[in-house]
Image (cartoon, rainbow, N blue to C red; front, side, top):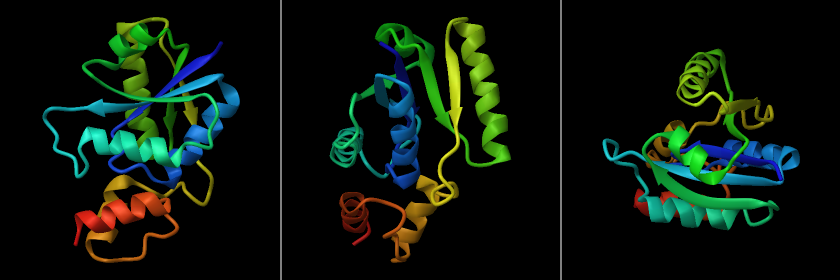
Length: 158
């Protein structure tokens, strides 16, 4: 069984994330969607709410598991028996950062492989940060997030 971990903050999950998860699910038997907890960052959605949103909007994806972790990704990776980490790449700036992270992770744990996936053209420009800003300003986010996430965002900014 091939297992991949897709780590991220997912604050909130959006259509670009879902696209990457769907692509990873075609390559692996199991995709662990892992919400990274960072005690130094306060997200818009608490971890439990992020997990619930991810659960709801990824039900259609076979072989997915949803969890959270704190600490080093390499430690979480080892604890799961995963074969690879999946990361989405949207732009050159993403590549530079993700390449550095992949090399650092491999220097900490030689067997940790990173797979880079490019989202679809329709979702490649999406980021949680920008979506939150558009939602905060009462802009139309219909094409960016599933209806469940849209409702959750709207509730946060009422």
